[in-house]
Length: 426
Ligand code: CMC
Image (cartoon, rainbow, N blue to C red):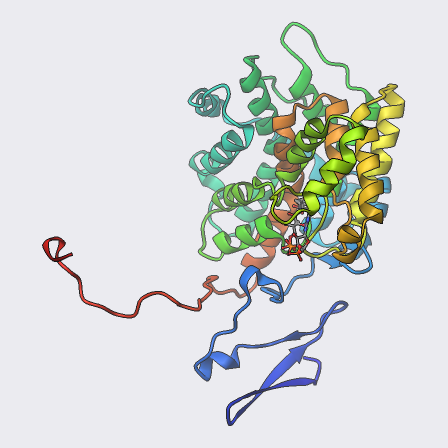
């Protein structure tokens, strides 16, 4: 509690509302008392609502700052590894050597999926969107791992967390293999997390895949840049599902479903489709005119963010990684030139400047994923894989503390009570 109070006056009632301070960031006003006075608060889209207390991730959208457990994303992306960031998000501190080895070995121990899971894949059409497959398969994990479903048992929760982080690359690669009609490739324990994923994607029983360390590093960095982002739509969905005491696999499947939309994780796929539609730098200006035209629903995908009103710090690292990967591979992708032109024009244009619209994490990620050889319809699956430790950390944080079922109220504007009319009388 900050000692400060907010005063709300409704008619002749004065209500004192306590104000709480976090370690950093805006204070929050506790509005619970308004319920006792017969009111609800109204905030569609949760624009001004802090739905929980959390110690995991902090964002200052005006300054373009993103911290995981206090550590800046730029430092984690360039100096840490994805596995270490997973440990950090889940446990709150960076691991020492023994803790890291132990964590890493637990992950490696759980990379395989139950052999029967492959029959789930076979039930899908080959041309199904991989997010549809991933959502179904991750939800189905709860039918296989009954020994870690007791959400009140901390050891069960720990094992479920490890299982999810360990199996997501296997599940994601199986989504790809199924879509192209190739046999599934089993994980290899001696490989690091990202190299293992790339090998499961691109090896076949006839030809092994030699992992290019530049690509493995880029993949790892992409996973780090997606690892968590405080109370975004998919994480809030995971928390909401978790508040009903649903099992962790079901909660993460709910998060995957929420992530799929083009306003959220689906934007990385949408950016590349947009760049392909624009086609060449000559068409950039006419495309930007369409985006600004209010009678046209076209959006500049990969731009804008609910929280960032400045550069998304993830976008800066992503752009730098994009340059590194393309130059290391000797790729001259016209999509990069197109994206840069689009960014340059948008950043000077009053429409975007006045609305504080900047490139977000999805603007450049697709160009790197394409260079790595990841197909377009798998981009959002990569986002889901990367976001898994964040979802689990938030679910764990909620379950380990007192919580209530998430149950918003509404401003009802429908019909008031009326009597049923028989069909013959309508
Ligand atoms: N292109 C054109 N106009 C835009 C865009 C855009 N990408 N984003 C916002 N605007 C306009 C919007 O039309 C509105 O204009 P006006 O005030 O005239 O009505 C104004 O900017 C404010 O936008 P908003 O829709 O009220 O903002 P929001 O916070 O509700 O939406 C957003 C945030 C991310 C959904 C939106 O910016 C968007 O749709 N961006 C494109 C999709 C995208 O790249 N999503 C990935 C987000 S980052 C990855 C993740 O965390 O999931």
